[in-house]
Length: 433
Image (cartoon, rainbow, N blue to C red; front, side, top):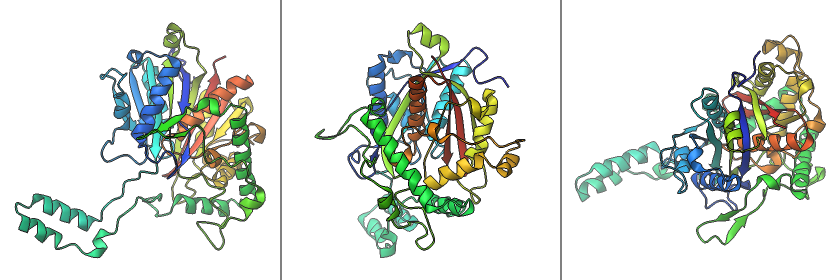
């Protein structure tokens, strides 16, 4: 099958950058998702010296949008240095939202509708909207329509204490009511993933992320952020990476989602996180004309889905072989693999699924995709250690994979992302060297 962009419009990944990823409620708490998105795009433009007038489109992903500024992409596009006529739109595909932004922008380049695009995402899980109850909302609307003080007082007299209890959005499936953590527990049980194996994988994530930060590979992709309004606090690195954790410490943590029989803990799960990330995409010809050296080319991508009531985070098992087929490749051709780590149980279930004849048959394959070489998997750690701002993670993984492919001289890299709603994403990058 002809791979993506082989019609003469190859999509080049020119640059990528992200903010530090900080646990929700910590150093980046004062910043909204718009703040984080604008900060990373402004810095990305500064570092690449790209003239903003060259940008044809901006696409950004977010999962928990602001009710005051729901189109985060347009807020990013209205940075002071940007022309005000850049079209911008926001996408949401749960944890694969930045991937959706990247592929939507890339599609515009392949179609010839754009030559230069910025894509990425941002999330502030420190600033999740808190909702009123429906009854209290009705009272507020009635009071706002009242034409007299008496009418407003009459409306508020209907308020009862239970009406004042706030409603916080849950990280749960509307279709099943299961939280993502409960779904991870289900996958651990169905696929017989033991607790010790999950903890060992989590420890690996922290150790590799710590090593990547120490030798500069990871930090080279991160910009420093000075936090408003006083700018007396700043973040220069991810604050979830534990250099001092051990298997014994992880083993001592109690299960969170099934306290009696469970194996999923805070230690082998990705934390709620604030952060932003973005990439610059160009047509191959435009990159050459601007004197930009591409990091990688987008070779192929695929999305997939399954019943969220089954194994919520298992859809990468369908997406990855599809992306490989579209690229005209097999797993044997892949030099590096980056998998989003929502939970250790999810990654280990996905890896098991890649080797499973039963999952291969469901995917319409004659044989399983194969076994992923662990020495080539998430070589600088993953979301368990680094963190997971829902809307930004996909751009982080894309940037890391492209840089590490170039550093190692590999040719092809595969990334996968699981997402709420039973969705999965996979993409193949090709080293531009």
